[in-house]
Image 1 (spheres, rainbow, N blue to C red):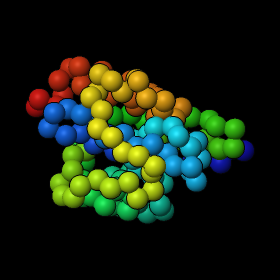
Image 2: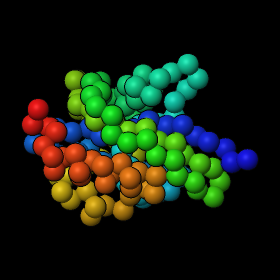
Image 3: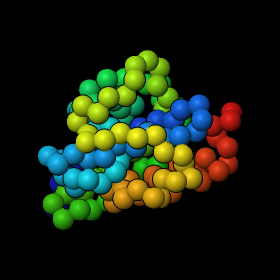
Image 4: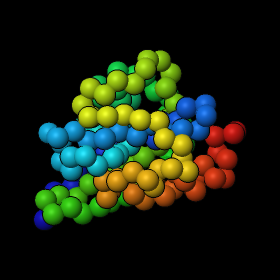
Length: 138
């Protein structure tokens, strides 16, 4: 049976509608690929509480989570990732790449120009759809 790793990721956006994208570092699985920041959900945590903790650890920021984006399972050779993504905004702090090799703000319309980790691609598609509908204008 394949091991399932349950993770949560934040689609962090700013007032201009740009999305914070994180490049996986050399010592991570799939180095060089882009992803939405986040991490493993620990026993006893909800996806949202895991996300707040992970973003604090990875980016040194506090976030406010808003609407659900996508729940995807992707089977890699070694394991399956179940990825739950949520829109979020930064409450305090400036993102610092503490685990990733690079962070950058990307307009939602340009998200597909990055080489995404396969598990993140359905969320990227959903984010583009949601942003086109103007969810951030609410």
